Image 1 (cartoon, rainbow, N blue to C red):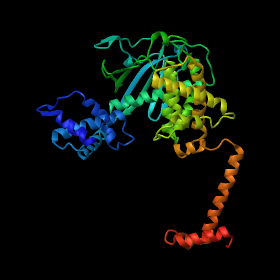
Image 2 (cartoon, one colour):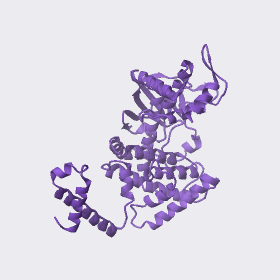
Image 3 (tube, rainbow, N blue to C red):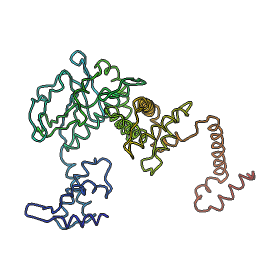
Image 4 (cartoon, helix red, strand yellow):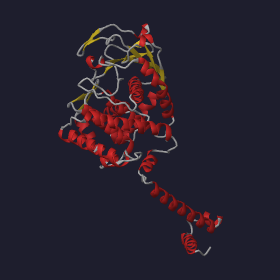
Length: 437
């Protein structure tokens, strides 16, 4: 398949004095999928991988070595050069949806090497006046008025990677703040401007490198931003400050957590559900967060059934929660496959959100001793019947005891030569079973 794509690329491009000339317009699609054909280090983000391999394939086309091995070698060389570039400081800020910030102290959070701080007023070097961006429209950094800001900083070698990391960290932090701010709360109000979480990204995110604005076109924006929705019942900063300590503890626990990747992605999906005003999209994001927790990453099919079986592992009476989840799974499938949606999403999504919050909080603070995600799945797949578990424990203890007896009867020399004389080990096992030792 890769060779076919490379052949199309060769036939659709022409080497010129200034580089490459394209005869087709769909090679951006090839650039997007090209990293999938190679083993890419986990430390390389998807955006960075696309950039590395698209540059590598262009270089190889010009040099006449358009093969998979040559592309991989060139991408590795480009990455090595990128790693030699010194890190620089990046700063990104956006509006923070909390009222009363000028009259309350700010707060600070930290995720890995990314630092976040809230400020009612921006320092002068971060302030920008209104301007007109061609093809986009009027950009008003001060809007919405009467709200404060969150400022994120990090050091990185690559600008796009720095932005990706800061926005992902912001999504994680907002998700945890919303998780604890809405803990076990229910709301009977809804409507087209209602969201389950009170905190979400501002309309625009402005980037600075070494305290210099990166340019009027180097900004990011929230496509779901709506001024009317933003101004509808925003949380008070005093309430946010109440949940900051718990959020700080959760971030610290996640830093070294063996399930960090799974939990972080689940929280980010939860935040997407918190921030959307679309009930159907909220359902999809919450369900995806449950799948992140309770379905193997490489699982093929049956994801709904696995969620239904495993997500109720901690319920004293699992029948009703499972029934609710089955209903949500059916509505989700109708929406995904037929575009349908039900009018009962408001209350049942709140049920799923509260379940997700309890589970995520439990895995963060109570299960840091699990070695990996497979261990978590093995744990939740165990029977919820205490008597059955006790019986299973007795059988496991008995099996371990049998293994110990076999090893003890073999002697140290025979244990060392276990693989060399399997017939002798089998005879020793038969002696133990027969009671001849």
